[in-house]
Amino acid sequence: MKLAQDQITEIKKFIHSRGFTHIEIEMEILDHVASAVEAKMEKNPNKSISKAIHEVHAGFGVMGFSVMEDEFRKSFSKLSRDKLVDIVFDYIASVKALRTLAILLFFYLIGDTILPFENGTYYKIYFYLLGMIEAIILLLALYSGTKKWRKKSFVFSVYGMYTAFSFTLFGQGFGILTDIFYQTNRLIPGLLFAMFSTITVLYAIIFYEMMQWGYRWTNERYLKYA
Image (tube, rainbow, N blue to C red; front, side, top):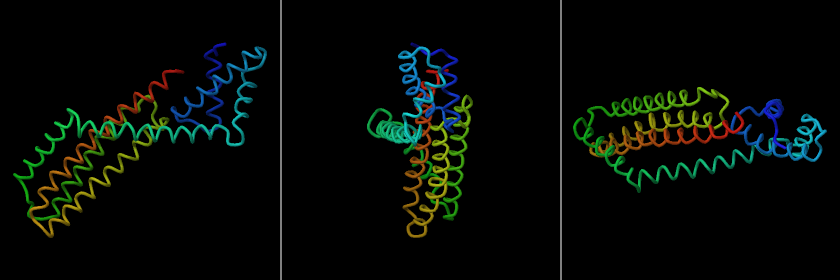
């Protein structure tokens, strides 16, 4: 038998009552529980939906739905890594590699025109601003993509942490590295300027594509029981 919408809603409420509120994890649990509840109610049509839900939950043992949450996190982590590798590979060994070369050439020409800075501190300021602008753009894109779910998406909570990571690494790390090399060799900063700027911009582009993929991935699961 196929569960009615009010029965699906009751299963959702039960899952929420156990502290699982992230959409992706909720849908993963709901998918499994709904199938198990259907099977139990087909076997015994007189069984209440509440009793069937509790029986299914009891079948998970002491850990309850936490078992499925752990499996989901591991599975999604691997899925994300594989997707990231695919996107990065595209920007290295496919037609998109032309974009990478264009960005590198753009920053090389800029660097050739305005560098070297007279003071190595300017490199820190430049990468700090570039990293901050990148983080702001990604956060705005993240905010726009989560209007439907706000803080209920596990996927986008992970992406929010990576946005902060990008600012710390690119906005501060690259500036410090370039400044260090500036103190020893005035020619190297120009090359690092182009390379680090390209990496920073590419990270934003690749990360944005990851966010778009994450949105579609989550939305598919959301719509299944919407």
